[in-house]
Image (cartoon, rainbow over all chains, first blue to last red; front, side, top):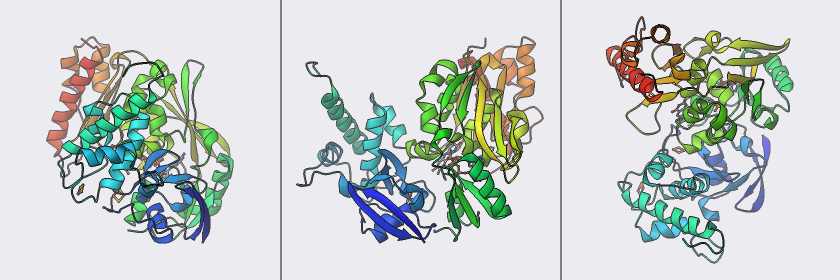
Length: 165
Length: 272
Ligand SMILES: Cc1cc2nc3c(=O)[nH]c(=O)nc-3n(C[C@H](O)[C@H](O)[C@H](O)COP(=O)(O)OP(=O)(O)OC[C@H]3O[C@@H](n4cnc5c(N)ncnc54)[C@H](O)[C@@H]3O)c2cc1C
Ligand code: FES
Ligand code: FES
């Protein structure tokens, strides 16, 4: 067994895992954070996407031991403590960017990382930036709309004081 | 699926990793980004008894100018290549090809050393390093040795690395002449069905997924050196090659793609 110490959603956590334990199983089965879903066996659906030190990662393609010392953010950690949705969640809500919702936690985490990494996102950028996240319900249009809306919100928030949007 | 059990060791330097590899014998494997190895372990296509994690060797994550070349640490991640200012200025092809690998989450974890050592002929960056005429630096129990990219890839998923060697650095000549990368696939995020990397106005042309290794399109390079047009040179792209056939494409379609993509890449690289 290996001792893994992580910060998950701002909280320090320690767990004893077999080295072969995937990060997604550590989150779901050891820490009870079942918001992160598992959708495939082939690293290709993105349902399991979390942030590792601020960057999107497929938690089914990482060992928990690889995340020792890292800061992990899961879908449980993105809304305000009082339940106020973050800008990406809010945009998904407003744009009807989900149906069954299975892909949504991964989509939201991937979108947060994408908006951070690529400041001038356009539609093509969102589509290629989310190519690792599959949705079997929505046809993607509303997801793309939501991410563009959240990206615009982030751009306004980041604009230097005094500048007009 | 869950990988078979293994012993897990964390290397605190490249030398330590080499020592752990030697001690672990044939069954020991390095773990870098894990984005080729972990999927294979989940399918139990790889069942190493010892994993030596080199993913924490941050001193091997760098991109720097050195003597007219660009030196890249083996643990540098694809996304770091993609966004590198040094590469944008001195070797834009490498940055652009890195941006074509998988999806952003894959690029956040996968490393240059990992994709080269994995030696999948369908991977993007090995062909780019080959087209650029890069050099790989391997560290073993006896010290460092340099391996030309042209000598590195020896067969399907096979390289010139010994089992107790680790890639520590990749050097590519600074290269700002006309360049382009064409990747053909049918689904987003997939590996290339065929790809073509063009460096320095066609003095380096390398093909993805046209054989058991990434391949220099020697006939195309020679024709261009002799003054051929992009269209005439590209017609030779599949010359002498025996590409694989799979669900995505048979061998003839791959040869066709190689010719078409090479023409597009050469044209985009400014070859008349
Ligand atoms: C969903 C998905 C999509 C992908 N799409 C693409 C794509 O479109 N194009 C593409 O090119 N690739 C693609 N990849 C593969 C990706 O680029 C991998 O990250 C890369 O091939 C391997 O790098 P790694 O650091 O993850 O290596 P690892 O998986 O850690 O290791 C791979 C192999 O290399 C060895 N190794 C690792 N580092 C070293 C070193 N420094 N010295 C010696 N040996 C070493 C390991 O022992 C292992 O055998 C994809 C992967 C996934 C999961
Ligand atoms: S469950 Fe991780 S990518 Fe599908
Ligand atoms: S909303 Fe059902 S899979 Fe995306």
